[in-house]
Image (cartoon, rainbow, N blue to C red):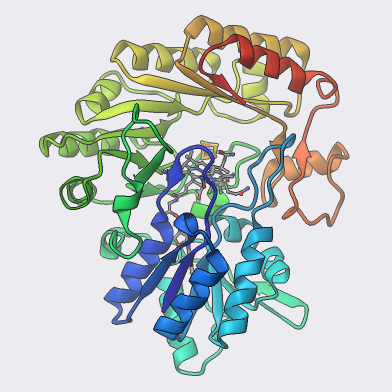
Length: 431
Ligand code: B12
Ligand code: SF4
């Protein structure tokens, strides 16, 4: 099997191709020979893919589609355009079946298959499903009705709902040699591109934020790995790969609280020198949790507040109040964590008053960083899609693979420029 990580986006922290390397480990555990190409470092992606195919002669090719676009209404970048050229190169080089997968693919399975002119893909977690697809193809059987498989033939498509791995431990850890983790090692404060390796301790998010496709990708049930396995993996990253900084990909590091505390204690017990970052929701953050996190090596937290107005937090169904956000930011700063907050502006109900309230709120609390986004990307399967249809911001049947955004009419004429100005005046605020 040849696995291709298509992601070449260097916005934000440059992510190690974690999901596809996990898919690779599972194939290896199933007895398959696996080779990998990471296009992040390629000067000529189509040529690199071609030479990998010539050298390895794969029976099946798995391609990971992580990002569709940069979620930026004002400076949009649409990633599939570049990927299409690489997929064309694969098609020219071999008749082996190409199977797509990944977070971006999972949100838009049939749209992606149509865009790339392909027939097969895997939605959701790919480990077991891809293994089964490969085994079906090997035996000459049609995999299209397997759970988690998206198929498109002669203009007609189907997506069978995926079954999530209830127990993550049998999956082991991703094979960090397949896509070389060393190339992603970076520590905060160093000069250069912020590449960073990542790690996942749990999958799923139970929250109901109206704009977020995360529960579509990972499901709503939180499933967590054995804390010892996660700590082992961090230890291996430090000792075998020289990694000095890691990023937890978990939607909410602090949930469920009992698990998070156990995980922190386990990491602390390893006495590692690597530090790490994670995202958390400011919901019932238990006293002592932030302290446990710092003792385990956490230095930086992203607090997914998105607004500083209770009206907007309610409209976005964030599930917490500005008071809870304030308590979390104060608590995190008190224990010495660097705090990153977010403003996601222009959603349903946004007004000049709520925008100013949000800015003042964060000015008062003083997190070290604030990332501002103006306009909300509309995704299928999210509540915001229905609201955007109602408010005339997208049309029924519109192909949302091509980025569409919700932007409240009342703030649209001035919000972007206003926030540019606000960011220019505030160190650490970026758009
Ligand atoms: C953590 C995260 C980040 C972190 C990454 C930190 C890091 N170092 O890893 C940060 C905050 C930096 C980030 C940044 C961005 N992100 Co982000 N991120 C995520 C998040 C929450 C998790 C991704 C992850 O690592 N998952 C864990 C791994 C194990 O899962 P996985 O990769 O999905 O793989 C599984 C399956 O997808 C599948 N699979 C994967 N590949 C393949 C291949 C094959 C062949 C098969 C069969 C299966 C398969 O099997 C895997 C194992 O089960 C996702 C949302 C989500 N829940 O997926 C968004 C997400 C991927 N990000 C998104 C975006 C847009 C971005 C940014 C462009 C935002 C921005 N403008 O800055 C940047 C781009 C970063 C970059 N350079 O690529 C979008 C992508 C959709 C879109 N519109 O394009 C998502 C889906 C969020 C969303 N809106 O819902 N992100
Ligand atoms: S808490 Fe975060 S990951 Fe979960 S639904 Fe809300 S925005 Fe998405």
